[in-house]
Length: 251
Image (tube, rainbow, N blue to C red; front, side, top):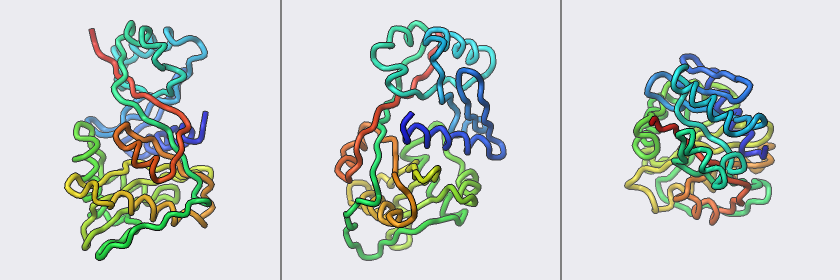
């Protein structure tokens, strides 16, 4: 397990331990569940030691009869292209791919472009977090919205922060950062649609990395979508692996 996977597993666990959310660990997987219709609900930390087919059969039974979430996340080694037939046989298909990436903030040497009326800061005010959640739910999770109350609760702990980029007082870009074992995981990185490709996301990312240079953080990790991969690659992130999201489709 690399640092990106480890951070992600602990990220889901921390969310599952919040009020109205749940986290459970069985012998074969972990589960994070959100209130009905909210993000996130999925299986993770998958164990294939007893065989992939048995695992998927147990998972299918749990989805059908026990109300388990209908999707899971696993690295490409566990269920890559060579296991597609096993997945199809058990009514699972890949629906998304993440590239695992990392960067060492201590050697980062980029300076963000200057911009009038632009500022980057951490936010924990509920109204600003709600504005951030609106951007997330518009651009990333339309079907499973992120609850602003969850963001507020998370930012009240020492291991979560939300960084927002403001242009003339309006939040246009943001990210949730989870700190675990001197590794910072970047999550929910998003920019308003009408503000994309104007340098706002790059400014936020570069400033955030620079702020972590002298904070004791040894590594910054993230899980890039296919479309965002060139952006992170150009910023200096290197690839450490791949993960897929798999969803169950009934017969």
